[in-house]
Image (cartoon, rainbow, N blue to C red; front, side, top):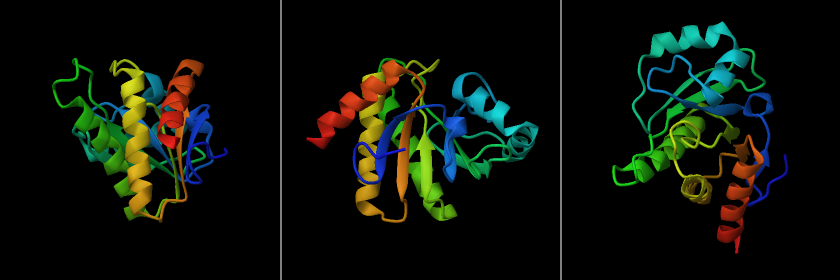
Length: 176
């Protein structure tokens, strides 16, 4: 995984559950009990112990983040965050999505995590426009890294080529 945006921030194509990072971020639903998309893939790869730990946590409000073990994943930790459902953009979706990144990164620092991978939060069934979500992801990660040196690497992981191309286009705009 080579950085593409800066020496500590990269856009990569891949499957988040296979990445050898300290923590992966789960685009979870409020219950944290599993679902479809990346959430279902993370729960399946981590095994039933993840679900058991999530049951002890309770709900997670949109924009907030919770930490669990990674169990059978290469990552030691999973940071669960609940992205907003796209409702046209006038219901605070941008701020809630930005909070997902900020709160996940703050939790990572508090836990001593050095490398972290994010999926395209809210871009699946939650319907967030990919270009807008990518802009928020890149800007929040860049802002965080500018003010904190404890994270060695942030990876924005794109499961598909259309996601990758959208994230790379945003990254190219902010790098120039």
